[in-house]
Length: 525
Image 1 (tube, rainbow, N blue to C red):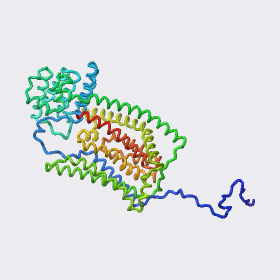
Image 2: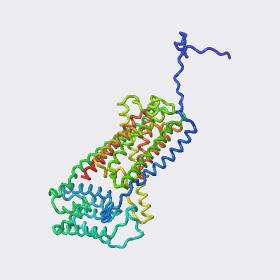
Image 3: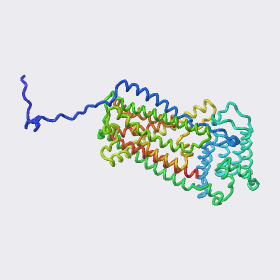
């Protein structure tokens, strides 16, 4: 059959053709690769894998150099930071509740401290006895103190795992000092505190800090000038906990609401991702990410070396923490490496999301909504991590016969030991540096590179894994961090701009740090 011309009524001819002007070609939608080459890409990938492993290992090492032996420190058995903070917290809370209602059930607070002390040192168990004395009464304290004396008098068990393998075994002098303190405490709980000499009182206060001081005021009224300052903060702790519960309830409700909305929109395909992935083959942003890992590792090792150097010469290291935190701002310069690989600054901004997307307020609002939508997954990941930790401890206990110490979080330790200045810098770093720098590196560069080769889920999981694993927390506790990283990556895919994940990152860190610092400031008071 002959070919007939198209029907002009069913296929309207563009007006531009009718008046003799050819139509403009459609805008190109082709994906272009980032600058780089397959060879550079292969080398950068190997470097990223190796450096990620090195950083993850270094982050989990104790990089605090041992201080010079102190003869005075060797003369006592030290307690743990965990029991110290936990004991302060629950003694203050328990006595606050008892001041409102003398019959308030506060035994459970003493039980929590006692459980933590079981895997600590003999001094931890003395502190748990003092806490029991305040919350349960003198008889409970004396019973626990008798057990500590029995423990000190017993021959050492070579099969027993030490509470802290890195700590030296307590000397006979240290054991004798603890026995003397227990004798002083027994006098207090027998109602004979007046028989204590000034030397005995000073020993309790110096060797046991808060616990020694609170024991010396045992039996006094809570409003006594000697006792009241030690108990202050119970009301503030209650207010903080009440506020936290409200925030948690609001977060759960808002989280499930936004999560359901997000699922419905995804199923209905009413969410159009704004992120435009590059074509496979580039390497510039992977190279930059490898440079970041290298610089981060050098900064961590340099800090450790400087601390060792100063301590070896008896010099103060108080300034090193704040300076190290501020030095991390230098890592914000790493993305500029891409300018040496053929990208101009405007292209760099567009590539890694340093732009305002559909408007600052809209992107910030999307970050808040996206954060809430990801909370159900975050809560689930926390639950999974806790279950796995419980199983891990049960297995270790079954194999070794000794209950292992619970995993510690360096963030808690750092807040507990920080000065006011360092705590302010830490808060600033968590709420400003981390959202800007970490999002630029992990969601701006690493996620972008991975999206050139993988789908959004695999790229999100890959960037989230690296994000979580290099944080200095026990491995199982990286699961919630990885979940957060995945949620931030999904926001990057959805919005294109980094403003949304930066907002979510800031919101999360600010909430957690505000709670921790508020509690620590009261407990340490």
